[in-house]
Image (tube, rainbow, N blue to C red; front, side, top):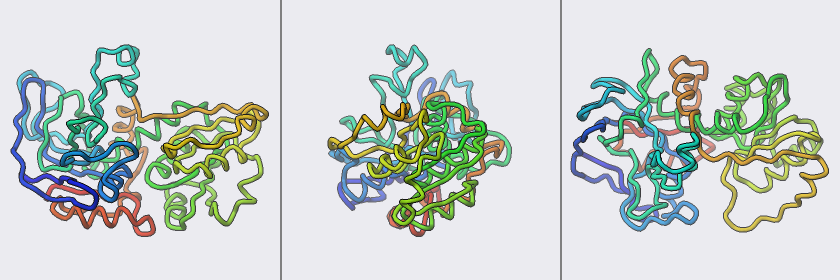
Amino acid sequence: MLACRIHAKEDLRIEPVASPEPGPGEVLVQLGAGGICGSDLHYYFEGRNGSFVVREPLIPGHEASGVIAAVGAGVTRVKVGDKAAISPSHACGKCDYCREGREHLCTSMRFLGSASLFPHVQGMFQEYFVMGERQCYPATGDVSLGELAFAEPLAVALHALNRGKPLLGKSVLVTGVGTIGCLMVMAAKLAGAAKVTVSDVLDRPLAKAIEVGADVALRADRDAEALAKPQFDAAFEVSGNFAALKTCVAAVKRGAFIVQVGTLPHEPLPFVLNELMVKELDFCPAFRWGIEFDWAVQYLQSRRVDVRPLLTGQFPLQDAVQAFELAKDKNRSTKVQVVFA
């Protein structure tokens, strides 16, 4: 079988690898669709994602769906032929955080498609892969494999929503409207937000955000005055840009809350905490997701959240380089996926 492997910066190869076999409690999955995430782009174009450096060939991919091809002994959660969303989160299930129901904070987490550990934890951009059965979330109905591959980024947005306060009737600002920013818009609307405003520095993402439910779109580089007035009850910073976080602090009302969703630069950042104090703002980071993955699959298969407008294109696994090139260009794409040919 074939796998997409990143050897170093801009060195991505489609290579034959051994076909795996599921053991007891495990499932063999045929790749359905795999979304290219920002971390995948960093690994390919830079050879690293922040402080995580590619030190051996890395199979990327942590946003994926598939079809169950075989099951090992004792598996009851799924059966051959089922389509499923695949959770990339493999927690230990034993540490204090796991036992408290906060598996995303597991001290021994193995997250697929990541160079955070060595040997690296290989991802799902391969024709077949083996998963523990509890990482497979079966879906029914006419939801497509492409839609199911949005479960992971949608879970990120739902977890961010869950980390904040109720949004019913509230005005909301979302800064940065790539895939997760757009999903944040849809999640806020699902939670009853009365008005959702988005900001970005590119026109295409702003137009896409309006398409999926945002009420107002502002160019952060042109509409600074409009974003400087305290007017929002809540803000979700999704871009991972420090200037956008400062915008959130300025744009929310006294007593509001801000959820940091995007990953900010690793170097120390100048931040005036007095601005949080004098407005008595609640600042809350959100990291990955927990139970929200279950909710994401439910929302996708019922299409209470319709992600189809966010899917720009799908490429056979063999054309992964072309897929990565398109995914990098935010003037032309939102979410690009690789699929089983």
